[in-house]
Length: 160
Image 1 (tube, rainbow, N blue to C red):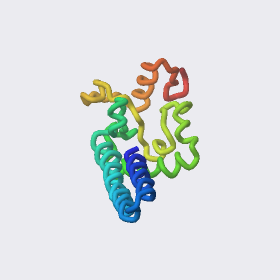
Image 2: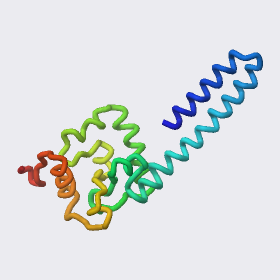
Image 3: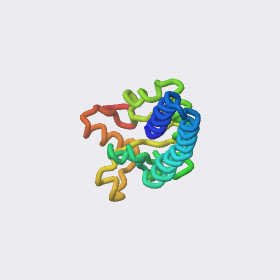
Image 4: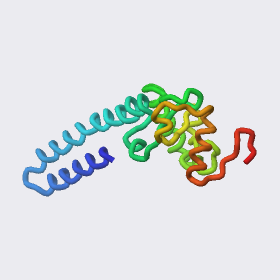
């Protein structure tokens, strides 16, 4: 979103620049501002999806929605490198086919393709998880979260 805003501001400045008498200098300033925003946007993405989500389990958006990304087996945040790889997988797999973003609607663990590839799950970051109280097995916690939302979720053996 910030990148879009930065490019939009650069575009408006560029439009004003082409309509003014000193258009070339204003256009150059707009180009410099737009190019300066790319590294800032990249740095924010690496911090948000790599460092913050990898260390705490929640990006800025997931914090607002009170969700965490944790390893399916360890039930801990997945770390900087794995968090960045997960985002790259999201970009190439889920964005390319679009079905990956819809897959959690019918998946028993509510995982996207990137979550399945990276062995991660997104779980609510309520008090039980925040205090370090672990639930025996990731699927049980996801089932518990589904029941809180009123969903019917089967057990690990496929029964209801």
